[in-house]
Image 1: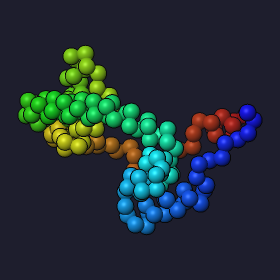
Image 2: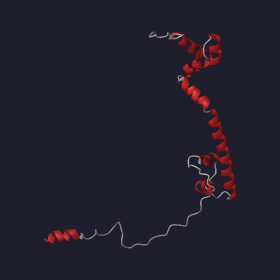
Image 3: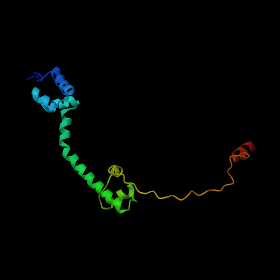
Image 4: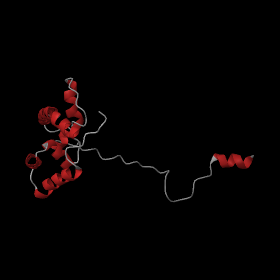
Length: 155
């Protein structure tokens, strides 16, 4: 009961299988079928990942597809809102519209705006007001000493 099972293939065999895939350019499935080994195991060896990572990636395919469809629907809605505003609204206002309808939109998901190249128009700013001051000049006599220096000399 305490004996360890010997792996079915030694390290040299596995490295040779990986070398065949890399050097010949054939798919891991073809090479695995030819050698009579598990294609997923060979693929994971070639990619230098764990098999659990591969199976997690396969299991998440449906969730990734659902997210992609939701992103496409949101991009369409954002485009409609942007065009309805005559291309004036930018990120804050376009994302505020779905939030008003109780559909929260994260700021990262609003990166779809950048992908769709939707930008609001910038309003022209009024010219800055000019201040006229006569008290501050970089030239002329230095300022009078402060009160602290007068009190210190009087004591």
